[in-house]
Structures are given as structure tokens and as C-alpha cells.
Length: 220
Ligand SMILES: Nc1ncnc2c1ncn2[C@@H]1O[C@H](COP(=O)(O)OP(=O)(O)OP(=O)(O)O)[C@@H](O)[C@H]1O
Image (cartoon, rainbow, N blue to C red):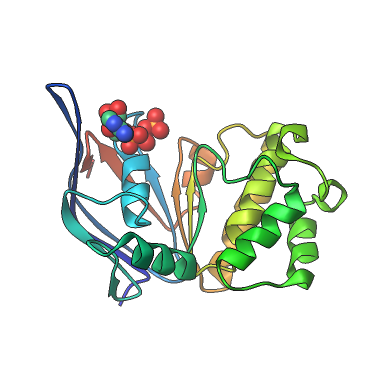
């Protein structure tokens, strides 16, 4: 049993008469203790795939299994429960609530996952070097600080699977190295990490690279 399995995923979007086939039969797996990087040109389907495997979006065909449990074609409530128990998610658009400061964002994430832990809040802030920014609101953070705070929120519930969409897109080299260190620490702890990235530096730290092209796995 893998931490995550995608079986023949299809996803189509319709705008007027136009149809976009964002995913055309994608299968892959992610094991515990593994970092997998999804790479591919803009529009190749990376974000759509991440949304489908975390149950934020429903594929039009195929199914997803998380720790051996089917995630696809379940009610929104069930998907939310499975997602909270298994995933930490860092979307491209970020995961910080604007009306909460960094510390409050972390606390809320832990509560949503049913894992409140005041001591872990301090440890998480320290691990992303944001202990001095605990009371800052998202609009008061720099790009690098936002990326680090977002990672801390995604890691707040100590998730078996971390899914991050372009986590290093807008950060400097030091922050990128810090984020990579976190992903490698997860590998050592036997936790799974799935990243979509355009960064060569990040992709080369992965155990496997899966290339996407026009919604399909690109074997070249
Ligand atoms: N909600 C949507 N409605 C219509 N089309 C969509 C929607 N989401 C994605 N698409 C289309 O699906 C295709 C795949 O998009 P997706 O965002 O998954 O690509 P990506 O590889 O993540 O790109 P990028 O590297 O730019 O983030 C694109 O053609 C995109 O325009």
C-alpha cells in the first residue's frame, strides 16, 4: 500500500464550446519517506493533478487512494475529513487567512486537523525562522516570510503527506534551501512529499521526477 495512488485520472474543463483536457489518464504513486517532484511546462496539468489527489477537486475519470482508502467519489464532508487527517497543503495561492496573524493561522490549522498543540506552534515558528514574526499578519510579511509561514501552516498537523504547489516560486536562494531542508527532514522521518515545481534545484533533490506534458505523463 502506498501513501498516495492516482489511477487513470482524467479532468476536463469547459468554457463555452471549448474543452480543455487538463488530465488525460494519469497514474502514479507516492510512498512514505519519498519526495516526488512533478515538473512540466505551464498548463501541463500539475496544479489540476494536485487538486485532484488531495480531493479539493473531483476527477472526471479514475480515482485516488490515500493510505489504501478511496478518496474519489465521496461526499464533500468525507473528503474533507480524509484530507485533514492525511494532507498538509501549500497551494500556489497560499494558505494563510488574511485576518489572522501567523501564530493564529498555525493554531487554526491544528484545530481543523483535530491536533491542537501549543508547544508545537513555537517549534514550528522556530523551524522556519519566524519566531519574531508570530504576531505579523500576512500582508506584513515579505515573499520569503510568506512562503515559510505557508510551509509552517501546511506542516502544522504533522501530515503523512505534504503537497506543495511551486513552494519556492518566489523565494530567494536561502529560503529555497531552508524549504528543501524541511522536505529532506520529512523524508528522513518517513513522511511523503509531493511537489509541483519549475525549480531545477528542488526537482533534483526529489527521489523521483514525474514529467507532465499536455495532461499526460511525459516519459522522455
Ligand atoms: N478551473 C479551470 N477552468 C478552466 N480551465 C482550467 C481550470 N484550471 C485549469 N485549467 C486549464 O487546465 C490546464 C492545466 O492547468 P494547470 O493549472 O493544472 O497547469 P500547471 O501545469 O499547474 O501550470 P502552471 O505551471 O502555470 O501552474 C491549462 O490549460 C489550464 O488553462
